[in-house]
Image 1 (tube, rainbow, N blue to C red):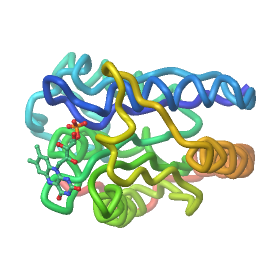
Image 2: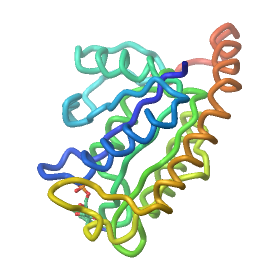
Image 3: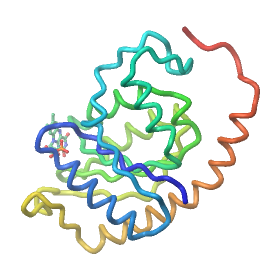
Image 4: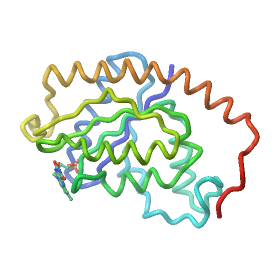
Length: 199
Ligand SMILES: Cc1cc2nc3c(=O)[nH]c(=O)nc-3n(C[C@H](O)[C@H](O)[C@H](O)COP(=O)(O)O)c2cc1C
């Protein structure tokens, strides 16, 4: 079964990302197509990028990078759970993405976003642009949650039926992409390296 990482994109104390990611993980388990793991950036505790070598080299000086590399390596697909901060993604999420290169390549990703009227969608648009640079395939099916505070009760996220239906569509489509991209990953890994690696 493909491994799905639900990435908790906010590290802020009291973040809504955690209960929303917990709901997302439960919905993914109920979907049944994936082996699901919640990946919490607060637990990964990555400092601001402190590796001297370009991520393409895969030469990691720090244990936190090796641990993050091993985590991302395991995934066949991602769901990024993200708010928008000033119309963009949280710095912690961008930082975690920047740490690695090969580990992201040719994997599909979906997004659960939330916020005010814009439902975090401006953050998702920025993330899509950055992730495609790492050959991550962002899918259009998504869960976009507007006015998120109205759906929180006692610290838990209470989805509406349309949001639950959107999650099912999202997992169906994400699953469609996992096999073809797994094949692509395998042939890319067997191909000779292309061009020099930037310092
Ligand atoms: C620094 C910062 C910037 C924010 N900018 C936006 C924004 O651009 N759009 C929006 O809808 N909400 C914005 N908000 C409100 C967030 O949607 C809300 O605080 C949400 O709980 C943040 O996600 P988190 O709790 O998982 O960190 C912002 C919140 C913070 C802390």
